[in-house]
Length: 255
Image (cartoon, rainbow, N blue to C red; front, top):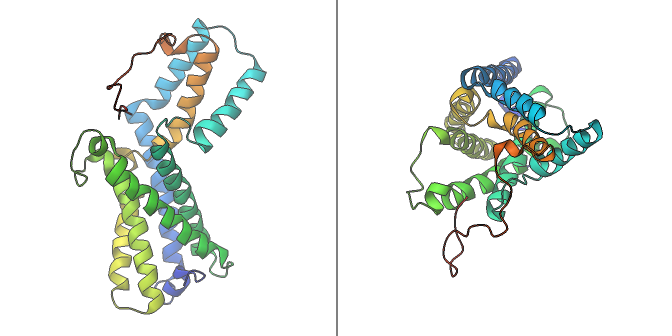
């Protein structure tokens, strides 16, 4: 089952061109949704305005240091998600992020090339399972409003569209693939849920946190440059004795 391309079996009842068109449509939705999000929120304008202010007020940062900052941003902030101080939150984020990349890339490869090697179905399963572990761990145990504020884990807001649709897509995908491989009734029903959740995931970019994955590297780079040139985004320097939150006996649970 883990080495079988589930989309190859699906091609017996659905034309490959339909699945391939759907994948292309999802890519278009992400690109269009991100553009709409940038225009509506003014994210790009805000970033470039901050960049210009930082360069005009601070000291000059030479090209070599900019390259070094870009490398640190890529390695620490993007690849290792270094912005998360909470170790559990970082691990959950990394599991979800890399699981998502494996899941999406493997899906595209298997849809456009049914004769691909068995490694891609295995990566597809691995990516989806990583999403489930990291995503459900975050949803039920790490979320700020659940872990720190005591709200119900079943309470959802607009900000949760991305994680919920991602979890729905991965969950229904694995159930569908499992039932299809065993020839069990109900596979078609879960395939329908899988398509709905996936469409919501990629079609809700303007209203979800999906687009933030494109903004975060730029924001992290700009922040490092502002520290390098001394402007620090108009923030004060670190105090000699930083304020302590929480009691001396209990570690604070803030994020």
